[in-house]
Length: 216
Length: 225
Image (cartoon, rainbow over all chains, first blue to last red; front, side, top):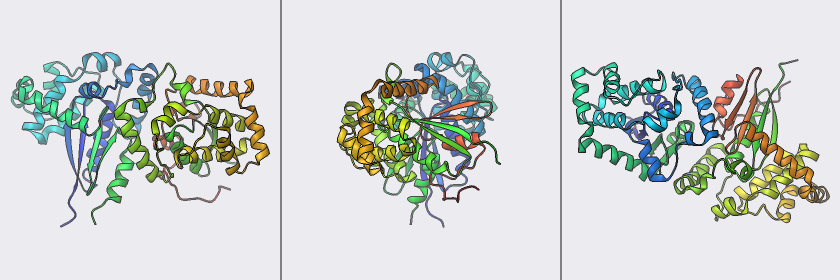
């Protein structure tokens, strides 16, 4: 029997394009590295509020940079990223609360579907410029991921229950406790240490940490 | 004769630890990739002004940055050690004289720019030494191999309009490329110019250049013929 897989927690929000990039890279590596990837749907607006940070899109130069960076990285990482026409409205006005509550419900009741449903939500907002705020939008993503209409509706009904709302809050608070000021964050649990890495651009460093701190 | 080397401009400030990481990686690759690396001493406070705020001002970012810079220093093999009074170094003491000095070096002794820049980083980001006093700057220049006389000559020029304006212009050029912080690497490709922010876009840069990325510490390769 080989060494115990190390746990990596990925805290993400489908509103965050960099979360999508980090997610796809880790999903690819979960079958290559000796890791156990735990997906943690979180609420980026909550993290911004708690940390006193502001969305980069609010700073004009960062918004301009982000648009180009996300496009180039999408090509390089081979994720079909296409910026929404009304970029600011999507990020700053429409948000992701229902979508992330839905993913929270999925994580609680059908965790085996979490990866696929998350991906379909990203494909809607960050590839096809489609809505992710309306109930119909969320159901469409769930069904595209392979959920039955019945199952999807069942979960949708639960998104305004205290149980699901609180779970999303808790996960978001956990990210904050790890020091998050944005998303995505990857938390690597190594033998003696826990490392929180911010962004989708610390994967090479993560690989290095996984090797350097490989169990003996 | 091979293809024309592509120009990469690196805009940096020695106050920025991420600038140091980007600088060392590009200095290693300048002898491997077919590039012409142009170092552009800039003033990070000038870039931040009215456009952004130093990450160190947000408590969680400051905490993250300290750890990130330490881990990356180890991984990139740059002897990074955080100054004891981190906030004072970044937010109070600053880098104006140091960057004016490097501007003067770039104007009069460009062949020394890489070494003097490195020695300033070694002072502030490795040995927790001052870089604001004239003696500090002279010490860095001399450690880089400049004669005392040469160094003093350049130091005298840092308050001249010529040098002050050159630093302003370089900083404005970075702003024109869209900088909201440093470092930025500007890659001039055949039909396009790409501005990449931070020290963590080198793999993407390699891809844009059509070159091979071998990590931040590539094996030394004999100079191309």
